[in-house]
Length: 283
Image (cartoon, rainbow, N blue to C red; front, side, top):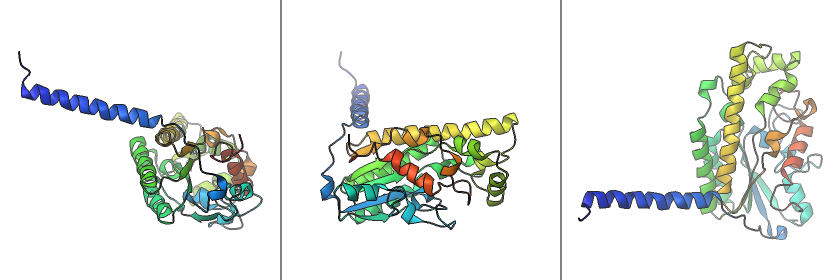
């Protein structure tokens, strides 16, 4: 008996979908490609939010880009930029396109800026602001976060396929725990309304507050999994393996200006954590 046209059409659609799905699975396991010699690097770009801008790491609540873990010029921090220059990229210049308060939805525009200047190496640190909202309900859905990151990586790949490094998001639960007993930190978090999804009612041990904090950290964990998966789709992308997410930072790593952003020591710690899994670190 012949197969009806409608059935044949449906089977063809299923086969096509299976082919696309198979391709996407292969893509998520893309083998890492060897980066070009470090001596060939002349332009890098740093993407992300206020962490990459070095906010609150100097004598100001504003940006201190010289202290950026990625593209800063402070020898105390020893950023990726300085480490690459020391390794042989002597003419390497950097552009910092990070935006204070940026969420994942703003990453595409930053990626497009990196493409326009011909960046050969791009660092990405994004996600804290997607979880640090006024309420748990305002956090970016994980599916949206994943799509936003995928779109940015796709734009980089289409615009010249630079080497990309993706840092994981620090633990917001740890941020809360390390300073929750500090009256200065609690006062600052309240007055500045910092990351209220995690930091509201910091002294409370009521089940609702405990569960709220756990929900925020769960979302951060989901974001980190999305970052890893998105990066794995590209042979030119490296993820930090969760190095930043796992790090139990100390009080000295956090700025006492807002008890939220990395201090100068914290920026140096971020640089030291993220450099080993990067493309040009020594084996």
